[in-house]
Image 1 (tube, helix red, strand yellow):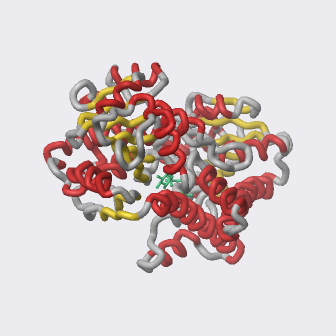
Image 2 (cartoon, protein in one colour):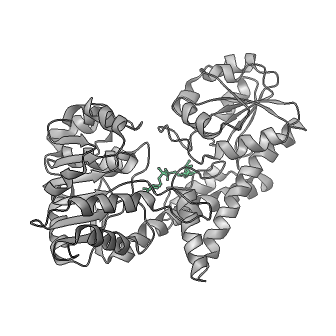
Image 3 (cartoon, protein in one colour):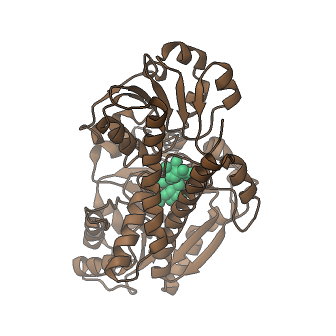
Length: 457
Ligand code: UGA
């Protein structure tokens, strides 16, 4: 099949590379020449483990990158994978979606039937909007010359290849029988793992043949659009919940790691997304919960559980700051080293991270901050130019003469640093591990005043 993926960000580049590996002629289309040049040079436009390798192996063979919208005229299937950032009122900004729809309309081939798929996370009803823009700019009719579908993406940054090749489910929203047929053909290789063994070298560490085969789930377009928001908001609620339980465990003397393990053994609950943190963050959960809440308010159908999860998440950020303050007596004039600026490991994505909220609160209370991140420092610095932070090229440098080290993101690198050297570097040996990944007994042996979250170390 001939596929075009509009957008070379997290959704478009990964989707494009995956379909190219699965044997489809796939073109990633982006208006940003720099990103297109990077792909044509065999490099990934984003930091995502394993993606460079795929692009390098498939570019010019089944994978192509271009800025030229006329490529749409060849396509059987067009994925829209552009960004949908939040506007100030929390609603999704659809300007890039509209631009993509106009571009598609201007180049749609009247002699072909093209399936247009929203893969970006878009508000319920966006497929209708895209269809009307395409009809207007092409003069062609929906369901005759083209059909809309929603096929939300569920990949996690940092694990995108594993999620794209071995998903739990493929959700397809379309009411058009022809597009249903096209989408079934499109996903045939992925659903049946055709040639996966032969191509396992390309998937690298993401290759997971024991993963159960995905479920192919067909529904109407609006329900598919809602499934994405409802899933992300549910996961956010789940994390907020375990973070609240962690705060209570700490007060009562219980251990949240054991509590989460015991809860997760109930298959109705499941063990995933019960990992304590200083609060969920990143480019998806904050944006998607905000959009869902704004829409629910607009239609006077308020989602009090999601609202509570958002408030609870802010309380978790505040709780971390209060915990440091309780330990150091005051934050004023204290030097604090932050390890991790991205919202989770294995990504360079530093948009809307918990680090930005926590660091701001620490600075407002008078603390001086040194920080490090293996891949997200540059983006964090650009997005948080107003924050007075000393960025250090090495993790160990963050720990020099500080009163506290706070581990916010559990990069493997931080588990492997020379913690005895950290102890020597610090002015006072307080370490707050907000992901409970360091070994309390080892840290105490080295002489640290070590604390996790929701555990009594
Ligand atoms: C999330 C969803 O998990 C994906 O299914 C979805 O496709 C994606 O959003 C999206 O909408 O594009 P992502 O934002 O990449 O993926 O990251 P997650 O792994 O879900 O983590 C989100 C936040 O929750 C991070 O801050 C992470 O540290 C935190 N988290 C996650 C916890 O605090 N505890 C957990 O147990 C799991």
